[in-house]
Structures are given as C-alpha cells and as structure tokens.
Image (tube, rainbow, N blue to C red):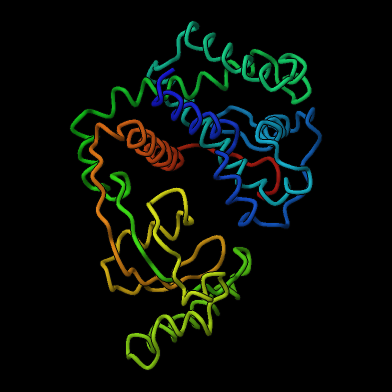
Length: 321
C-alpha cells in the first residue's frame, strides 16, 4: 500500500470510526461535558436517522472502542463522534449514489492487513474484533468507505488542482520554518466566559505592544501562562506541523515577520503571536505529494459532508448531546 493510500486510509478510516485520532485529542478538550452517558456496546438504541439509515448506540460504542476512548471520557466527546458518524454515513450514501465503490479484492487486502496488524500486536484478531463489537462484515463495511473515497479523489483531484493547492499552501508543505513568540492566557474550551475575558485581556495587551509602551517580550514574561514565558514567549523554530498546535501554526503561517496577530483561540486557551523570523523551505510538490494529497482529501471530505448536510434529512431520536 502506497504512502498516499495509507494516508487516506488513516485519515478517513478514523473518520469512519467517528473521528480521527487527532480529532479525538481535540474533542476530549472541547466537547460539551453535560452529555448523557453512552449505552453499553451491545445497545441497538437508535440515536439518529440519516436519510432513512440508522446510527445506533452500538455504532457509537464501536467507534469509541476503535479509538480506545476511555469510559470516563466518552460522555464529553459523544457529540463529536456522533457528528463524525453522520458525516461518514452521508459520504457513504453519496459514493453509493455515484456507484463509486471499493472492490472485494481491495477490501480483502485491507482486512488482511488490519488483522495482521492485530496479530503483530499480540492479539487474536477475531477475539479482538468480537470484544469491541465488530464482525468481519461490519469491518468490511467500514473499510470500504475510505477505499471508495480514494476512488472519488482519484477522479476529483487532477494534477492541476493538486499543484494549485500546493502553490496556495506552499509554506505548509515545503519545509518552511518560523520563529515566533507567544502570549497564552489559558481558558478551557467549554468556558466561553473565560475565553472572552482572555480575548479582552490580550486585546488590551496588544494595544500596549503596538503603542510601544511595553515590549512583546516583557508582556509575555509578565502575563503569559505558557512555559515559554520565561524566554519572553519565544517558542523557538517550528514547521507547520509537528511542534506547535495546529491552531497556532494556522495563524502564524499567515503572518509576515514582525507582525502581531489578533487574539486567537486554541484548545489551550487564547494566544497572541509575534513572528520574528521565517526560513523558506525548498521541498517541491513531488517531494511531498502524498502529504499534500492527504491534506486536500481531508479538506474535501469535510466540505462534502457540510454540503450534503444542507439537503439531508437528519432525524435525532434522542436529545442532541
């Protein structure tokens, strides 16, 4: 299996299981905490009907099991996982309507790889699947979705479209690195009052920094709640992915050297960012083609799901978490 196929399988298969691993890490910080406890893994209670097709508690709990979400965290991330299940069902319906399907041979190959992975981890595949509420047929259905999506992407993403996306996001892929300082005021994602207070505080600090009544470095030492405060907010050198939270990189990479951001939110709180240096990268599209294609595929998945929701009949059978 190529790197591109692995990227799609990981990105979309985890979405099929109600959230990629990264989405789970973010969701456990940000999802509402007042949701009702989930039912047992074997429950067939219907949660929501999507264009006539049911999503049940059993589907949800298989998703939790697939990503090893602890029991005590499941209530907090329930809405995120259900939303991802809805999106996956909508994508699955779209692909079927276009007669875009995975072949039995493709699915068989992925099932074999999946089970071999369980064996390498020292597990009995059939026992592990059964304990987590899966049958081989359910696993086949789940794996078929990302494989069919790959066929859709093969048609939808032309070489010209891929190059355009790379050119528009070049610094995110070509090895470009930034040097930056930050001021972080911590505020839990679910605490809107605290987040607004942090934004007001950082807006005021930004005015003082721009007016040169205080330096960014001193403001960070005095007010930041990040470990980097001791270095005047200096977070060091970082590429787009791998070191800083994605919300931070997303803002920083839009900025010019010397520019100070407006306050922006992440799962850690609210930030101000000052970009102090930029080192351009030299990787070409051919060097990072798999990464670019995987990112574009993920964005197209989200866009497609959002578009399909506009005309979908989504009937909640329980109170929305």
